Structures are given as C-alpha cells and as structure tokens.
Length: 305
Image 1: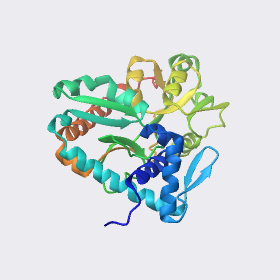
Image 2 (image 1 turned 30 degrees about the vertical axis):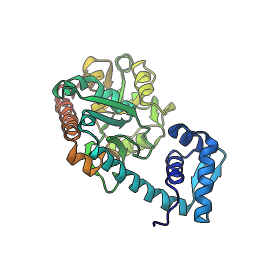
Image 3 (image 1 turned 180 degrees about the vertical axis):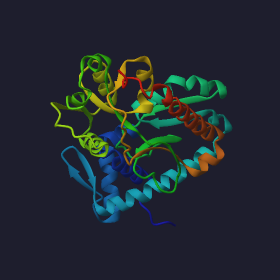
Image 4 (image 1 turned 90 degrees about the horizontal axis):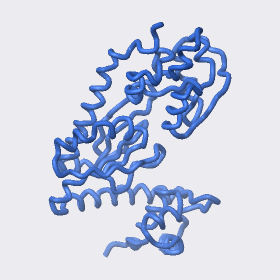
C-alpha cells in the first residue's frame, strides 16, 4: 500500500498552489473555501509541516510546498494525458486551447474558420490564459509566452516578437519631425523595460518621453495608439491589418526582439495520439509565416513622406 496523502487533499493543494488562492481553487473545484482549507489542513497534518504561508491576498508556497507542487503538477499532467488518450474517439473532435487574449484576437480569430473548414466536425474551445499564469490546466494546447518552455512536454516556437514603434495616422501626418515623435507620449505594456531596450538597441539619441503611460492590456494600448494618444511598441505580426489599412503607421522601422517567445505547448503523448493537435500547430505556423512574408508589402507604410 502506498504511503501517500489522500487524492482529495492533493487535488485541493494543487489547485490552490496553481491559483495562488484558496478562493480561486474552491471556485475551480466547485466546492466551498472551507472545504479547501479543510483538505489543506488534512494534508499538512499528514506531512507534519506547512505547505503554504497564508498572505493577506492569497497563499504562498513554502519550500517544501513548492517541491510537492512540482511533483503533483507532473503527476496530474501525466494522468490527464493518459485519460485523454483512452477516452472514446469522439473526444478527438474537441481541441481545447488556452492562449493570451491579444494573440487569440490578432492571430487566431481572423482566419480560424479556414482551419475549421479543413477539419469538419471539430470543436475548438478557446480560453484565455494570463501571460503570467503557469501553463497548466485541462487544455490540450497552451500557447505560452515564456523565456523557456515547460520541461517534459512537446513545445514548438511559434513567434519571436519584433517590436516596432507605431502611432496613429493623424499624429504621424501632423508631426514634421519624426525623431521628435518618438520622444512624445510613450505607451508601455506593464513596464518601461521594452522601450528602454528598443532605444538602446536602436542607437538613437532620444530625450526622455514627455509622458509615460503604462497599461496591462494590449488591446487598450492599440486602441490608444489609433486614437492618437502616443507611440507604442507592438509586434509587427500583431498589427499587420492596422498597418495595411492605414489605421497606424510605423514611427521607425528599427525592431527589438525580446528574449521571451510564444510557444506551442502540449503533452508529448497527446501530440502523438491526437492528430488535430499537430494539424493545429501546422496551421498556426502557416498563418504566422504568411503574415511575416507580407512584411515586404508594408515595409515602408508610414515611413515614406
């Protein structure tokens, strides 16, 4: 007989550790927060140590808890892969994908009907994954923005961003000195680092911006750019439509490549046994490749004049 804590307590612990919150774990497992707390106490009593440090706005893993979480994560992922493999074949017609909302909106949604037409009867379930959320859960595929893909899984790089400064058409046409345009209002995604890296790699001598606006939503940044609120760094692949339609212009053609990349991640076993997973990866790579090949058509949009 295996000397292990109960599966119920381990499941409650894994959900709480992954979400960083007992409340979120309770919501995910459709039970009360008190039940989650009770299972955690059972687990800690069994182990004779604490797995969490309780914080005001959630929980934080102890060193021992972090070791247990890593092991639970691997075990549950393996179990999930086997369950998906042995389920009846009709479940092969469902593909569950977790992906960041901006990537989903710009690269998947515009032409996903083409992929569905090539795979009759397939259902695609898209759910949004915050960028800083670990790539775990019940999805077949995770499209994760990360420095290193998770170990012990199949992964394929989809896209390394090429961040370029873009601005609205109106302020591009109104600004005679294009160099000065880059020193105006700068719009940032979550922090100042990307602009600092872009300026350093460009070799340009730019004065500090007149105003720095920091957002945590790339959709809002793009809308602010189109409305003339400033200049933002956005991957060229993500703004191809706006560049082609003239809604935004390139403020400069220098690009900066962050070290993080978008990665297609799934279980090795699932990739081998669920053909639609491989088909979806091929379609994504084709879509991204087609967009990048069209760069030549828009290379000078907004830079000539």
